[in-house]
Image (cartoon, rainbow, N blue to C red):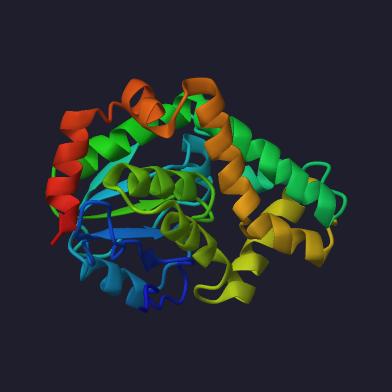
Length: 257
């Protein structure tokens, strides 16, 4: 199953539907998309995005990221933009983790620690609540993105998959697609420019760790949530407003037989 949508200037653009869910059915295809930022989108990219007829675009970035990397929009862009008016992270997570990342081992450790903390950042919780609320409206296709489309976006998608009943192994597979989808060299080069502009000369191998994902990262976030809240279901209900009623609305709009 080819999930990637080929883009020239938007990295990691893909459909995260199609997975089987518990109780029968599959997550709908063609309504759930994820990506990195759109600052470098080409005119052809914008036309392809407009053709998706997006109803919501959930931008997980903070104000400073949006100002520094403003998203281009197509002539027919008509989606409602959902965002947090503030900072969802002091820096994009992969840029934050790069501080003091002297080698690949340290980079892995810092990314794991970052994922342990991500679910408890109040601004990120706020935009995650808005993400679930938007999708529960069932108005049509949506896109969720951040800067690189892998950390904040990856956590949002994993939580949605869980709420819909996608098996954890399938949710992990989707998370790891970041490492293989699209033009990896171009995506890593773009990330390297941002990271080195902030922290200086970090070697290529360490940059590749920071720009990728690893099963240990998502597992670190899951375990932190379970330790703090008892279960991911409790976290979804108590912190993100995804109670039984909202989960039912999500399944109604996003799962097909």
